[in-house]
Length: 241
Length: 241
DNA sequence: CGATCTCTTGAGTTCCCTCAACTTAGGTGG
DNA sequence: CCACCTAAGTTGAGGGAACTCAAGAGATCG
Image (cartoon, rainbow over all chains, first blue to last red):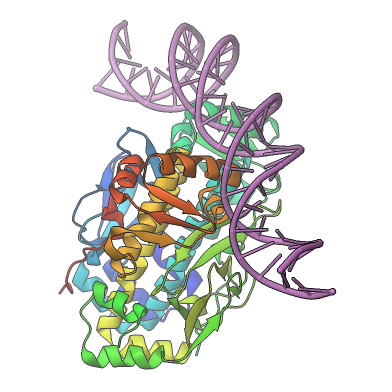
């Protein structure tokens, strides 16, 4: 059965059975990674492309003053940059938030995949455009939204992404992230995240617990955030001529 | 003679004479665009790929409350997304800041370029990774830097990019952007941008004038910003095997 | 059963915003 | 060539959203 990575790519472009089995082969071997483990660190020379099959990770950077800023979350099915091998040096780190299962695809194998399978290339481009859309949406949030809108918007993003890969069952969804991770994602302090989380809880949108947040009223979050999911590009054109 | 776009791609990968002439052909026709003109608007169905050959533009989004947030600046040599044609709909607009000259490359021509010229593909991937690095750096700035650091950091980014395309002569460099554009790029108000600009002027880093900022002491800016240009990936690996 | 991490709450502070008024530069048309 | 208009920039005063500092309560784990 196809894993989450393949599943995700299939949502972006039609893949042939041949392409699917090539992807299955490429991601057949995976490692289990404990929580809070760096998959790659800032300054490292990039190695193979890797793909998160289970669990959550995030991109981050530590500033000279010791503060941390996250720039993205990787959920099951998400990959690091496909062309990571071009870079001389990583400008940020990637670290697991939870226990995870990660597959790696060597440079040669990657080249072979993209060279022989136009559907895979197409799907990966679409995934990359979506990732850029998410980065831009973060910038918009950080620049022009209040703290409660920012938090609600991020949770909406994670909710929609989770739903689209089928890990948000019957409307509810558990996000396995601590409040300090939310704080570092949103450019806020943990103290303030805590107060804003309480507001969302009082609004009936969330249930809080240690190390995780359960979304119970996505509609309310969407209203609070002013969320418009267009930027996630669920709809892409079919293979342009 | 090669234009800025070709010039920029050549800095990312070695191009054959054949590839260079293919690019020259593709960008031979260009239009002059007045300042403050949308090249494409949020909600539009994407058209051809376009490339800014002269002048400055920016990506932006207007929020329901009427505020604006910029997500990137396009300088001479910069292109919109290469795979823009995949998307069903733009999630942001792109608008000129100054008078500009813009070339467009049709979908078919683009496909042909990338299909037959591995050097071009390589260079475009590298350019794209750089763009993503810039997006991530903006997130870091907005999340974890003070207003003076943020402003200085943005100006450093623009300065380094300008220098790398050869439009920053003898150390000095004129940025043709108004303070309100800086404000919308940094998630600040024009009032506060003005006050922070004055601080940088008093520090001897800048000379201010109507509609533009002249960088006179880049080193000082780097110190104030805590700027590390690694993320701009000036160094990429030569063609991996 | 201390050690550690996460969360919570309170009190005081500060950075940046809001609101408002005014200046200056450029452009345009009478 | 002046009168007017608009966009850009400047400055001041007051306010508020989010931060800092601090202390403590609950979980989880070796």
